[in-house]
Image (cartoon, rainbow, N blue to C red):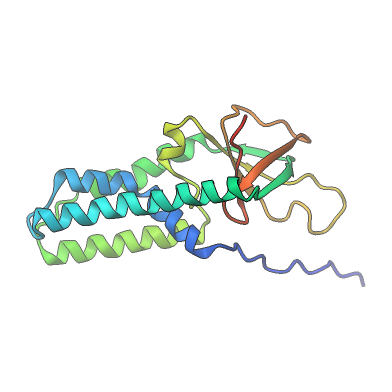
Length: 192
């Protein structure tokens, strides 16, 4: 009886960066909340908290990109099967931002419900590895692709997909791309 080689669980790596990427992906929500305000928390506190939650994760993201460039933390990736995720930005906007924006925070119970719902979304983004969805990438005309390595007979190749953030409009299978590592499964190609 032949047994398949066991594929070990792959740790994503850089967990702090992943949570920062998730929070930076929710920046538009906090911008909307800052503009809208609420009747429970004084504006100076609420506005300050929203600004911090928008700015700090995005600064960390920029620092990680700068660090990867400075340290030449690159990897050459060979594309196999490629999936484009342009539509995920729209799903993200409608699924997370609009329901929260419309919700009125009039009581402490509403605030608690909003925080718990936000925690669920952060958990789902973390657990489902959707930390690469960021409207800032779209603003700067980057595309997001999920790339599977081509099957070369190695039992470990192609088992773990990765995300490539690039300005290219299309990726060609069997072509090599050199990109900076943001996390162990998220790479960013700067000069394309």
